[in-house]
Amino acid sequence: MLTTDLPTLPPGLDSWDQPMRQALAEAHSAAQAGEVPVGAVLLGPDGAVLARAANAPIANGDPTAHAEILAMRQAARRLGNYRLTGCTLVVTLEPCLMCLGAMVHARIGALVYGAHDPKSGAVASRLDAASLDFVNHRFPALGGVLAQECGDVLRRFFRARRQAATPPPAPPGSHGSESA
Image 1 (cartoon, rainbow, N blue to C red):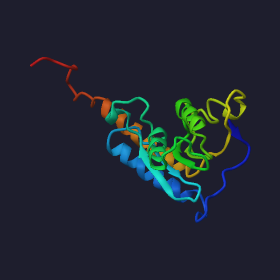
Image 2 (spheres, rainbow, N blue to C red):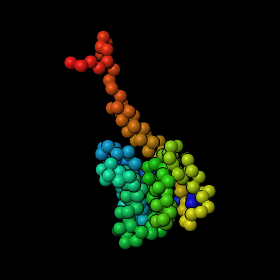
Image 3 (cartoon, rainbow, N blue to C red):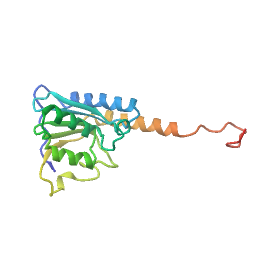
Image 4 (cartoon, one colour):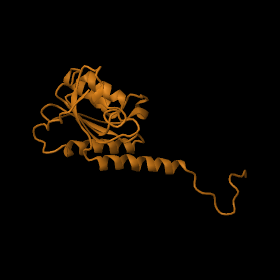
């Protein structure tokens, strides 16, 4: 699915940091909305931003509303074509299998992602996408762009959720939950 080539920077970009920072802004929006903080930006062949999206499965009541899927949907509508040939998807977290499949069907030109996903990353972490010989579209991918920042957003989000779910310790002398 992936090639060994690296994605080519579109005109006007000196590095992948700028579009990744835009994707990070989307991830922060997702976190503020209580969604897992993943953001995506889809660039056209000329480097122009065609779409940007934040994770929204909770808000949309849609398990497929990952940032990558939403960005590809927006760009396809904008272009009037579901084929996103020559476009580059920039996302803060290594895509899952569902998103990777959608990228193949959309015929994206390249993928750039930030943090690796050791739990469900389908590009390199949990699945070696380059070894999938049954897919009919291949594209270059680059992982690790602003990986620390992208990972930090996720770690802070999940740390806060765990702390919110942990009940505070009982005051000294109490015996747990007593009825009043």
